Length: 64
Image 1 (tube, one colour):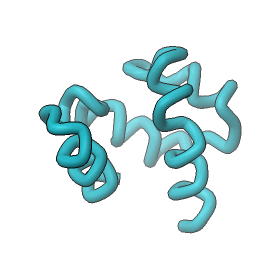
Image 2 (cartoon, one colour):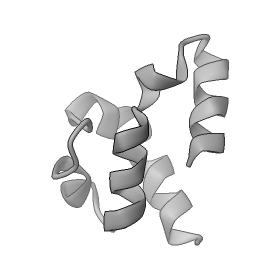
Image 3 (cartoon, helix red, strand yellow):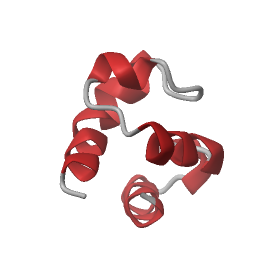
Image 4 (cartoon, one colour):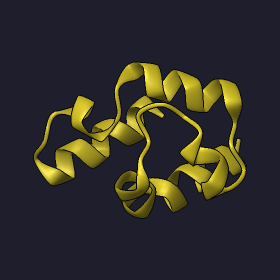
């Protein structure tokens, strides 16, 4: 997840923490959400981030 976040931040020319904070990545890894609805329950992930990154996150987690 950190590698993905670094790539997204680099492409967008923004700091990595603007994509997701470390604590959010840890929560994603611990909870392993399977749907966008489950992503909503993770602190630091709102509607806009789900729209921007939700599909990618779910794909990464699904391929573990």
